[in-house]
Amino acid sequence: MKKTRNLFILRGKEDLVLSVLDELLFKGLSVFKEKQISTEIVKEVFRNNKSVACRDVAEESLKETAIFITVTEHNFSCANSIQTSAGNIAEQFACIATKHHCDIGDHKANSSGLGEAPKRSDCPYCRYMDDGYCDRDIGLHRTLYRSKNFFVMPTIGEFIKGYLLIIPKQHVMSNAELPLEVRQEFLTVLEDVCYMLQLTYCTSNVLVWENGSGNGGIGKAKNSIVHSHTHVAPSRLDADSIETFSHFPFERISYEDLHLYGKNSYLLIRGENDEDWRINDNPNLYIPRQYVRQLLLYKDYTFLPDEIWDWRHHPFVDKIKETCEEIQAALLKHWDDVPQRIQQNTKEFLFKM
Image (cartoon, rainbow, N blue to C red; front, side, top):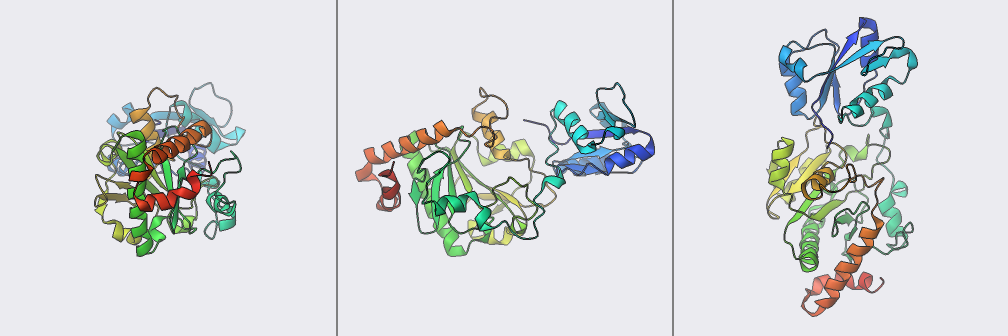
């Protein structure tokens, strides 16, 4: 995984350095123009999982792990240098970060900039429903389960077989926007999904999480899918491991109280059961794209190539089909013992495949 909590110290003529700092508007980066900033400021930024770009720091020990960048007006033979006359300042900085395997997030110029929530007509999940729950891109009915307010299907980027999404039919940006009775239905759907996964893959180790988009989805990256979707994946990774690894503080909540957290984007993870939900909705916290997917890869699938977690570049269509076929086969094999509710909500799609 790329590193967060990095320290970038820029050096050069004052006016050039200040002009460069003005361009570094990355979501995972905090910029300071003071001649020197304190250790406490750096630590506070690191607590929010962000990196720091500055002119200098007071604490000498911090410099031991810092990445120094030379800012010049013209060509300079230095591995970490930004040439202001070349333009594309943010791009030059991003290249340096990439070389050092640092995650600084998207540049804010790449955010949607919408003054309103993303429209239903622009939503791939809503188009999928309008197309009769058929994915035209891969020619597959991949919905395995459908209830009154939700549908369930394998995800694009299925590097884990059995990795499913629970998606509300209503075009909302997070489950926090759903009324209580619909959220209660969600817990029933989740129970059924876990049953199907255990039946198919003989495992009770299932990780459940949602990246909720606050503020109506405004400001999200242009190619993000902000229609609410909850991830459900067989995995040894659990909520305790995520807390330990990330150092994010999580608050324990009841799912009934999720509506209280709809203002900001959040990361919600289920713990041991439906009574144990953990959330962080700190608007200052930087959570990398597909963060939990990255953790899943490095926990369970370290033999796979780096960054294969990115569904935009690695759709794993073959795994989608395998998941559909394997869950279908397990349900049909045990059909007489499958709870009636699951039979009712899967029958239409099982016999379309």
